[in-house]
Length: 402
Image (cartoon, rainbow, N blue to C red):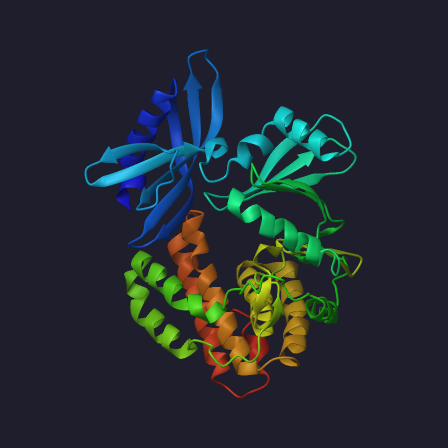
């Protein structure tokens, strides 16, 4: 991992920028995706000077491991091979170069029959080699272009077509198999995450979430969605490599969580449901986002994702926002526990929180060691709650003072 951090990284990036005719001024890690023993990918926020005296902000990506994508600039440093590319030249996401170029994006929208007008493009999310989301504004209403590897775009288009017929899922305006992108409508309202931070805004009754989950149709391709417990060991391994002093606690936690093999029948699920995936307005749910992971799974996992994100957010919140999240969390928890096994739910919430414990390091928050340990402690409290038969213990798990 040191090759892509510190001075070594700056030297490698400098060579790559020089080969493109520029000079690297600064480079700061912005995202780190590490799979110990397999691959490390780092996204940098860089400032580059050019021969014409311009200075631009760039996102540079460097990756090591056995699967450096074809098309990346490959440099060698000792025994390490490093692949380097820019945001708009991601070898696995060719659509990003289209979506982030206003002229090319406008041309694409013209071909798809979207109403004309000048557009501006803004990156909203990026996972190297996996996906990107670009917001396009300037027409009659905002649009979002979701970019995935071209081989994955047809199933994504089909998933949106299926789900939007039953749920408030963004409808597709069209898609390009060549570029690996789908153009999606914007949904009204704000995310539940935003609304939880705003006083006086009505929140949706959790029964509405339950009803929405009941309306998810069965996927035609039989796709399986992730099992939260099956990922726990991997997340614990990563956290243990980052903070070795936590290894004993993490080993005990993973052993206590189990594998969730007896979670009941498979049903249609969202697969990654949380407060940033739900659009709300005036107490109603107006949108369900990011249906990439929708498929067959266990309903308890959808509830665990919602609760795990709420618990983690509340653990870091203060004042009225913290109280508001906690009170809403009580309602969500009561609704979930009326539908699924309480102990199984809490174990899975613990697994979700453990996964979120990798977040502070991934986005390089200055206090990531402390923030990571706090999330591990929160996961432990949810697990301990699962071992208790006390009905009032659940809500205390949404309180860091417990």
